[in-house]
Length: 145
Image (tube, rainbow, N blue to C red; front, side):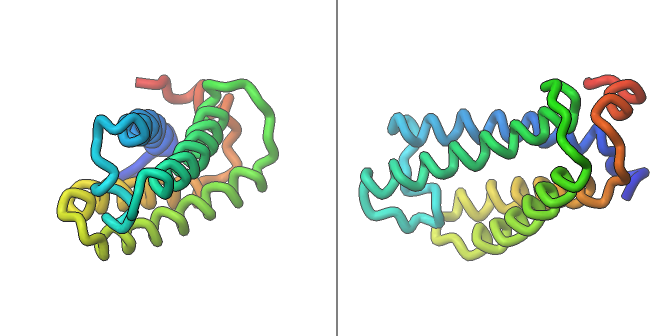
């Protein structure tokens, strides 16, 4: 897996995807994108959509924050075990989310978000399986592209 997907590439992919996901959820919250295409097409009203979308924004913001710290973009020292637990948890979450997207009643969600969450699963797994590399080592050896 090291040759196919480097830690740096996994971090870059995740930074871009999480940023785009946050923009997407903000567009759903503002009504620009209809909420019928998220959460498996099972949201019943705007109040329910607001609660679920706020959860999405918080969870995705936390994951983006962790990726930014691991990439060395944000200078914060966290222990290796913290990242290990976080990236394993993210891998499990994205694997379950991929299955959930496959079961969605919305064709767009199934076709677009299934590959996206699968890619996030692969990147999270790559980071969970990486050795104890500090963000400074990663940043020093491979520049952000």
